[in-house]
Image 1 (cartoon, rainbow, N blue to C red):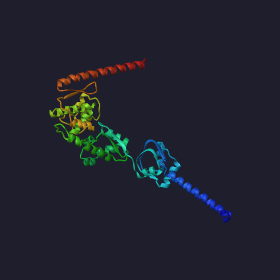
Image 2: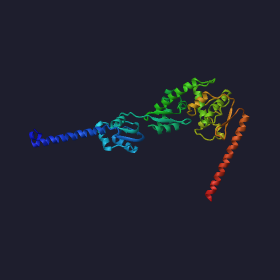
Image 3: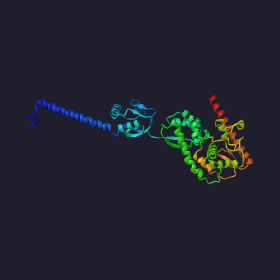
Image 4: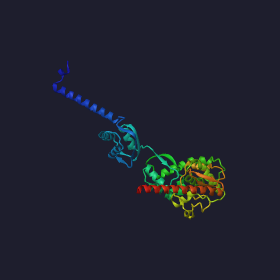
Length: 359
């Protein structure tokens, strides 16, 4: 017996319609589930950092995606976010590269599971330059960094004054969270300094009698003096010789620090009444003048043993070292004549350029 013989015609149409409807529902549900959990719903074809400066809603996230060139279906994204329940997304840095499902990416950003960013701290800079650099790389502004170094409460907690603390901002590449506070960043660099320099200071090979604070201060001077890495232990040894002989350190970088700018010094600059003027005050200055690299700190700890007491710049970009003041005067005259020649060449080129413009 066949179905058509049992059921009236109207009932057969109802059942057929119900079957079709059920198939459509199941097909739609299956299709949506596939789309919802597809591993290629959101695509970042190139490595991209998505940074949300504040807690963001879905519209704001979509605007960030569009600006970054992320590939996705906008209507489907709104649908998926509604189904999954992810409507707000936390402040942070999120590194995207490759394909993601809606659940994978939206839940990550909603929970604030961010990726660290690489922070570069250069040697031989100033507090202002450090503040500007960090503000470009992290989520706070430069003023917030400056306030940390002038915060008496924070300085008391570290046990250092401003110069001592900044001198310990070890030049390095750090992995940090984009939303880190300025205090957290400074503390992280301070910890890195303590960890990296403690062993170097403990294992010093020389008959060393400088404290870690004195090492840091001397290293900060060497950092500004030495353009050639190989000269660092030589320059450190020269200054160490002066300290042992109770000579004035006569380090030009300390004058630059006292003036607040790095430029060619004038005769009157050396008469500046300032605690950091090592032409007038004996011994090391009160604290570091910059943040020296670890290689410079190690060069001071393991300084070269020699009898040099004087140095002067040379045309090769380094220094000429001498033992006596008479030798120093000879080398200084060579340097002065070379500079005068460079000035004459420069002026001649400027005159020739001006003459060509007038013709």
